[in-house]
Length: 193
Image (cartoon, rainbow, N blue to C red; front, top):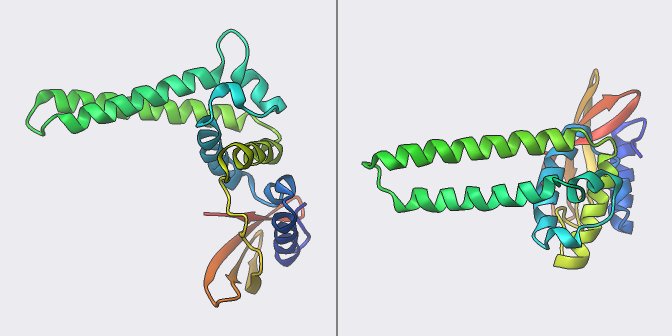
């Protein structure tokens, strides 16, 4: 759960990762980060096939019914891959390259728009992401997030400016990286990326 200060939220996220509480970890992240991570986690989870997807209310409409979104998504991924392969086979002087390039662009844009709309409709993104994370760790041996993120790190040099804050995460070996926070409804959330 996000804390009343950036340090509180960082500590909550650390403890959640250390204990394998993925819902707790994702609950500390702001929505924009969650949407980006959900797209990546969904793609990773679908590598195992639609029939093996985890159960979660947000996934019900995506994988069942007359026209499941995930089936269309997998079909589009194949079409995008074939389009990219066709592009590599053409030369820059061929008119077909321009046609295939535009087709490929349109496929990617349509995929991004539909995926974004589907994920933005999900109210419980932390719950969805934690279900996908547990699923990929179980079926693929790893997840979309490092099991060491924030673990053994310290948060230093935090500066707050209104509803935003920035700090430095420092590992035990001295590596450092910036971390951003946003404040929503009196709680601080981590912004990744």
